[in-house]
Image (cartoon, rainbow, N blue to C red; front, side, top):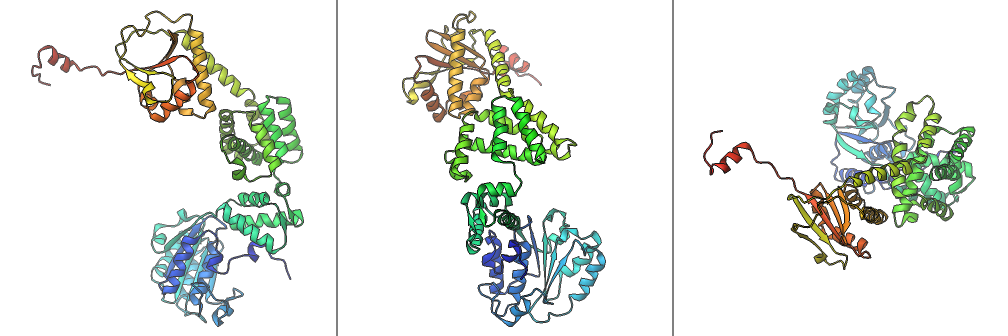
Length: 522
């Protein structure tokens, strides 16, 4: 007997076997049980999510003499005649190859004839978006008022291409991408039935590469079974799919982390020699750095990523060598060239230039930012201003009383320019920024980076901002507690100053004020 592909062998035969589309199968089974089926349906969604399979199950169920909870029984005479998909009552039409108006006119003439065996004659038109405009027009009237014995089921992956006149005549069902969990369970069931050995992490990898499509997932599984000879491991799946080895991606990532250009180019040359597609390499690098970011930021990263323990340990070690900010910047740089890679004549060169530009980029950026900040701080002078308010914080404990707003006294600011304590003030701010980043408090970190003035005087760390909106953020209870936690080991009193923007009075208001609110004609 000829071997069937897994996606054909395990094509669902009842609504219960359709995966991840409960919102659709429940509606259809209820219609069948209550005998309230519609005359036209539109099944739309991504490839491999069960549109055509559901249409065939529905076509058999409406004609079944003894359907079981809305699904065909496969035992009655009608079901027996439908088993080999050669029934004259269920007609599947490929709109991609039968898209002309002549084919639709021929269909329109045939719908008047009653079904041969069953109760309904069901027309399944696949890829209906491929019909021509004239074919749509020829179908409209029949679709709106077909004979009582006819049901139309239109299937498409590109519903946006259908005219509104077609959409308004159909009951629409949107098929969702199937979840990773459901795909993994399906693979477990199939491999168990076929006595195929597997690693759980390998199943998760196959399911993730299927990207929500059952057909794609089973096609990948078929390939992996043939490659692995009934023993599917995480490594064998990577090899079967032609993916870059984890070692290659790790070497490239280490080259960037260690700023080793020679090692980077050697790794790329090795991949090029093996015939690597550099468009795919770009995506794999993004996924690799995303994995490092997940390890860096997610507590239960191992459970989330579902990879072998030894691989997870290696990636964890690499993730510890780089900060989350650097990973985000690298991913941003790599994702920005994805479109360029598709149309590039020489994608390898584009990849090399991009990766080489990442060497030292974080250190250079950090150096420039610090230099700019220091130059800005060197020009700071604190002067008394009537448009300032003060926010004082003591690091005694986390009680809200330690963070309060008070009016500024006449001698709060020294009218002289900052002198000897400037360096200490900068060190204190740098320490606060470091602690904020280590605790992933990026909002507060960005606020502190936007400071205008800073100095230490009389055990006071005075920090000034031009943006008064920051005050509302800093006054939030959570943020107050976070700041207190960070500075509780210091002996400084931190004061924040916010510049108030006072709207200037109009000329008319000034005149009214000067002349005792005299009426002025505007």
